[in-house]
Picture 1 (cartoon, rainbow, N blue to C red):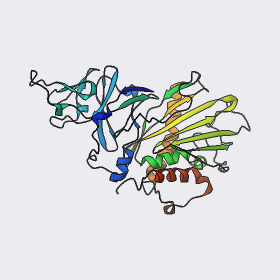
Picture 2: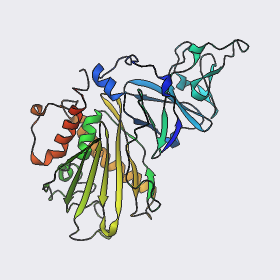
Picture 3: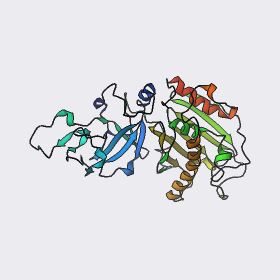
Picture 4: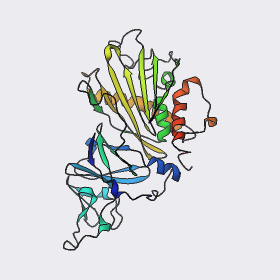
Length: 352
């Protein structure tokens, strides 16, 4: 894990909720304590990059070797700093050219270059960690960075791939629940990898962990794209090992023939209660001869199939009261996920 910028002391305790916050206040404050990815590392060049997390507009910029995450608002006259320019060491506001550098400190006021710079001109910043090819941050950090682990990422035998993100017009909890759902393959993913005639979900049992839960699911449903017949093995029992890190991150480790492994992280970053930016780093020790662009394309097709379902679900939020939706035995992971969220104090997630 590489901590490239961290100044949690600059985040005042009990900060005000973002303007037009879509979450219930108590849920927002719980969510703000967690770490989320907000951008691909390769997206951030010399200039500023505007993103949104939990309804809070943020700006990212490079200050030499460090990455700065700050409120996307110039403290002088309230113009988004993402409209400005950068040189890889500083950024300058588009309105009056105020220059900001490492740790969000204002370094230059062009209109009054010889005057002392008031402390109120320094930016409110948040910690930044670059991991799995993603830039992670936390709006209300406590202690050391709690970036969810990803199996095999640091092992030399594994190829590391950071796929482009996907925006979903839906709630992060619904998206994560869809990722860990094993009963939808035969109905949603029949154009990519699943078999419409193989819908039975064998028994499985989630196991609680300190950060959420794990579940191992075995079946004959393969993981190669439909039409690929030269890479699988007839009669092979596929093991899918899910690890859920609440609130909105999960990894899926798929066991291939001959000790092959493919790990997909589903990191759902809540832009708002109604929009999710889904990041999907992948590592694998199989099919390393295939072009990375093919991985991007196949991953996109699979998640586009899921996106159509998530965007259509009602209610839009994830009902945490078990009596509000019906359940079957195949839903054990979904039930475990909702139970883990309730155990951490979440309620309904958003206001309307």
